[in-house]
Length: 281
Image 1 (tube, rainbow, N blue to C red):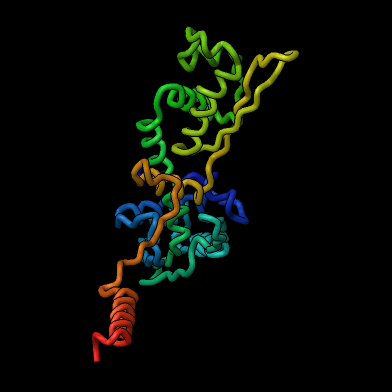
Image 2 (cartoon, rainbow, N blue to C red; image 1 turned 180 degrees about the horizontal axis):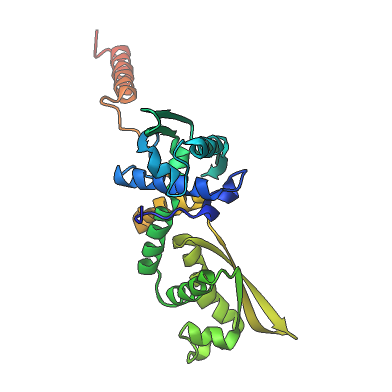
């Protein structure tokens, strides 16, 4: 079970109930089973799992499965919801369960949306790795600084403008001494790249002392599971295809009926003219 850690903070914002320790333990086991079976987060069909009940109960669970039944009932009633590419969705974490073989085995039916939620940490880790590779220059430095604050459970951070210039490696650039230039050519592109490639959504707010910008506040939020799925899908595309709608192109027809009809009409018209002129009978 060390191969996967399920963060309740990723599920709770989209769910209608808080996760108990027993529910988190069950999700760890379910996630580990999905991992061992190599079930992808993007699967479209529900999956049946057969798991030893002792694993789902955990080391502190009762041997008679009383607590396990209560845990499974709660997971069945745990609703999750979201909006993926503009289309709303809803599901439960466990769609159906059966305790069989005198209580030794538990069969669970996991809907595809729940699989995506349970596998979310893996998706987020994949995006983090891609962002670390893809971001360049100021974007990479800013992302590293914000990620460090995010790991400290901070929701925002304020940097002085001079501190920010130095941190982003442009303190010696005269052209970036003016705030407007610094923002337009360094900060705005860095934030746009972070929001495009990373796992957080970042907002920037300049703070003034008098008429001059003295510091910059950065606020960030975890992307939702659906936003992370979209980011992951976009990261898989070539650069020229990012953030572009997929276009379905129809194959050309095997025969151009319109052209054939046009040729026939032209021949008929030509024959009529020739006939009227006396060249044809």
